[in-house]
Length: 195
Image 1: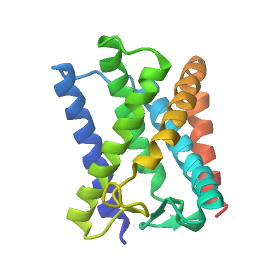
Image 2: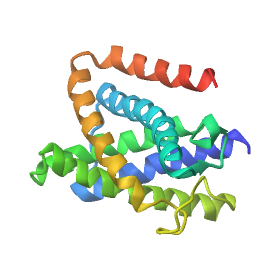
Image 3: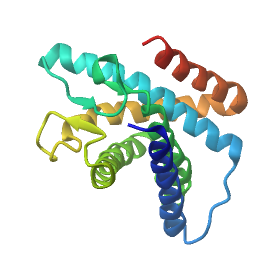
Image 4: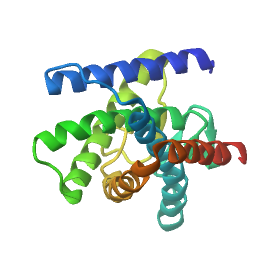
């Protein structure tokens, strides 16, 4: 698979995420670049490391893969060289959506985690459907059939826990956005490079 169409696909999703959140907010949102990059890089690092951890955990206990990446797979297919880009897009979604949640008085970590879990499942379906329509195959393939192999309800507990970790990480990292953005990017690079 060629890289340029994948980059354009990710950019298309960045635009879609921005426009969706502008519609929710009923205005175009100003982007604080340093804070947005922190959200993006934190989600990219957490997403890639989380996929490897959850993939191995699930395989150990259930003896099959919960999902397998179909595009540039690494680590037995549990993650991908492309995964940091898509998890980064989701980090951008969380950056923009966080303000919308706060305006609706959803600030409690558990409430945010539920929204995060449901939202991630919906976004995985949309990502996989759009990827299938554009490129003719899945971007990642889920073994369970409960949601048509696009994602699975079985991921919800993992996404809930990931949200709690992500929320705490963002709070702690905000004091030094640049340092933690660089560290998150370095962690992603190391994980991808050592495969």
